[in-house]
Image (cartoon, rainbow, N blue to C red; front, side, top):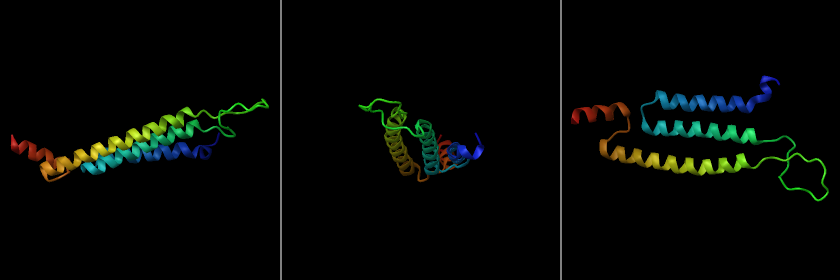
Length: 120
């Protein structure tokens, strides 16, 4: 196997590192939520690319029989569920960020920490 033949793994790794960097390096809560979303997309891409079978067909047994390569639909179905859960989680996280903004007037982590320390 050559390295360039595995381009989908490289895309997954790059997206995962971008998402992780955004989560770690940024103090803005909205940017952190977007970083988590990018990280999640990389995981979904990984599972979907692992479930792809070259030359595979839908898992329906033909009447003629014969040797047929089937694709497993389970990873794709699981990732559809993961997408729905991820969207709901992102919506909840962004709603919490809006509530934090209403309470503190900012979405920057360091400013929220300073406001909490000064309130005590």
